[in-house]
Image 1 (cartoon, one colour):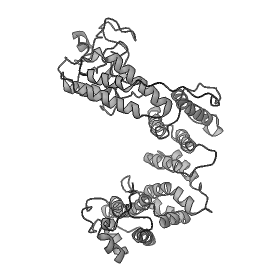
Image 2 (cartoon, rainbow, N blue to C red):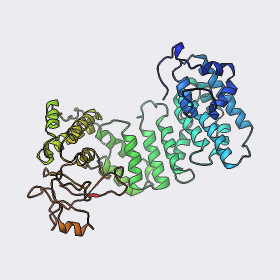
Image 3 (cartoon, helix red, strand yellow):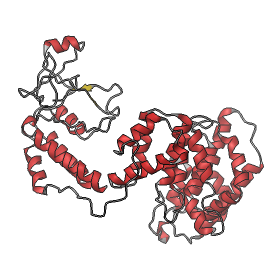
Length: 453
């Protein structure tokens, strides 16, 4: 990301004077990694360019010279055709070209951006031959630069069609994993997200359509689809009812009829829309926002977090759930994050089994793949513990392993409920709650099962 501060004369790197004296030679050295730009020699060319040019004012001469020099360098490389090189030298050359494209999008250079759009057919046909590997893919980098600079070009070229690239982005989404590598989905969705705003149309509708096209073209698994949906949904804070209307309106369109039923059903369930219903209009009265417990409650819990965890388990679960409901209703996650951090810091200060407390402090903020909170406390106030104990010490646990459970789980102990009864589910014959929970695959490549208390 380019720095927004205005550079003072003493902030200018001395290499900029050498660059202005001989732009073509110095730019080639920068892309080759030979430029004298200490202390930035270890940075790749795009990061070095950001550090050297990112803090300069828009009207600074060096930025304009860089814009023109990059365009001329790329034109010369294109005119020369594909060099006949062995694999490693060829990949190095493609990396230089890719990083030149990347610098244009990183610094939002206007002349190069406009030229890429004016001569799109020329640049695109050349870039098609630069996709030799995932790590060295000039086509991907050009398309990503085109995606990032759409609004810049729309502002600089009022006569140009600001949505001219939308069919390209939809085609990329539909064929990512087929004609295009699967990681191209990211650039297709980015292009749809960075389209200029349409008057009277919500900004998230283009990328929602992109997800539909991807689902129809490639039939991804629910886990793959949910990963993309949740990642993008988090960038657009909206009320839950808003997402319900948006998804229902999308699925009612004729273009979404071929979307797999399994994904449709999951999507409706995720945004709580019943099959066959029509999109409802917003309620005239304001939606009730959950009330937050005062800061004193959080501070009190943090102080008492050194106590045995089962004694305050219900209070922690209630507080975290309250913060989560508030975040879902308002799109504001600040209170959820800060509360989780405060409580987590209190938990890990306990004297009994620091390792176990540390793991529990992390686990209680995780969510399962089914979007269900894997809170560290169960509805009976007992701790949820992994079937494989993270430590040989048992003092931090709310239950105890049984010999029978060790035999059933090949030596990995399950856990008994700490209370006499568990109101959530009926215990199994060995005394353990039966409902399984899963921990995030980020925590472990082999996700262990969880007991309900």
